[in-house]
Amino acid sequence: MNGWRSPVALLVLLAACANWASAQSQPRTAKAIGTCVVIQTNAASVETPFALRAVGSCETAENGGTQNCTAEIVPTGADIILDVTDTDGVPSCLRLAGTDPCAVVQNGPVIFQSPRHATQSFSAASDRVRMTTMIRQKRVQQTTADLPPSARFPLNAGRLFDVLRNRSSVAARLECAMADGDHRIFPIVGEADLSPNIRFVAKNSSEPAFDILTYRVTP
Image: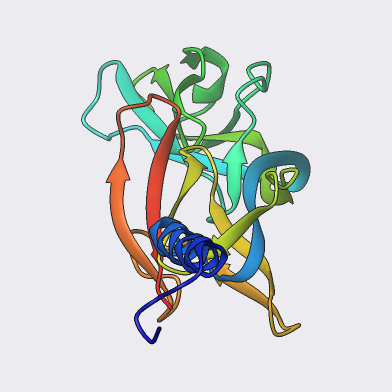
């Protein structure tokens, strides 16, 4: 009687074994350590009129005959540019020799090589003159604004996730609500890890407008 099992007991045992095998075959659910959004920042330039004008001067030589000189005009500051629409200015003339050499001076147009460099050439008679050109300027200021955040996605331990970073963006970051209740910000800088738990894996630059950055979440 000791080796005998009832049919009911055998069915219960087989069902238990089947349930255990099924549970072992199912992948474990990845543990989420938080959820995040990607926020990217764009920059724009704003130009405003600047009261001070840029000045360029040149002097003709003393060796007689028709004299030529070219004035170079550059902005007065690193954040200043020339107003390329200012082409109607009248240059000033200072007599350096002779009776009235300024009366016969001829000037060419203002030529802008770039918003930070312009020239104007002059032709005078044999007497020396000093020619001065003034051009309006603009101050250039950079403004930044965040784009709307991406869709929220989970940080699952052991899993990969992708970030699509626009090449036109000047900055990007992850803003994450962590599982422990903490709020974290992870700046995206080059191909560096975002944190000890968020490791950089690869960069895909096949798209013309954005890069695909892949990261792995470690437990």
